[in-house]
Length: 311
Image (cartoon, rainbow, N blue to C red):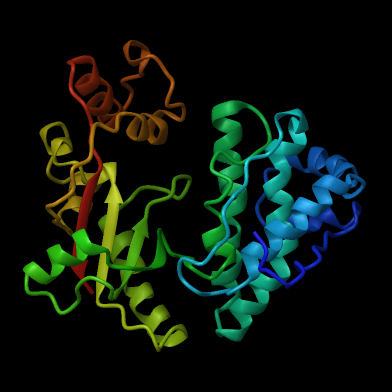
């Protein structure tokens, strides 16, 4: 995790009485604050945890802003228990000054910086919703936010990325100006942000066009891509043509060349919160819930979709 001959950056954490304000700025759920404050001194007094904190923060902030250069997330000892579940919250808190400095260097508006980094709290809310405890379900995901690779712009998130062989091949075959190896923006749809209306998506896309042209002028983004269960064409069999999901799908041209197997867990997790819920017990309160559950109960499967459109 560290480079040969180069000592890792020494990580910094706010004192226990200062930590709540930092956590609240990151939208950490209120019910998680006291526990994280109590764990802070335990981490700081543990030489093994401090050693790992230094190296994780160093891997996160090195090559700040460079696409695809974030460090690997290491497995944590099971005996760490609650500290292990919360450890990467402290990693992101310690990396916050570097993230903020990178945003300032790029001229990122403070409101965009704040809303982007506050996605840490949203992911903690997701963890609590599913597992009933403090933690991060996918600890490494927020590294994109803190490294300047992903930004929240209105309803959608936009990740600076590069077209791979399959998606780039699809765009080139369609006569698009961008192909494999060219920059692209990877769209992500986060929950707890209201409905995915066409108007909200239009606004986000327009914001993204201006944002990246202004703050990353050396990178020419001509393509938006999305990899999501929301692009599974089977959804059209269950949802009305004017539904937000179908309208979202209509923005994209589906790319061939992907041979994904069934991915039933993702739609169940995003729609119902818990991917391990028994299919027979999935609620039928909304059109989307009925679509996901009824399809699975009928013996069908859901698949990830891969699409693109020119910016």
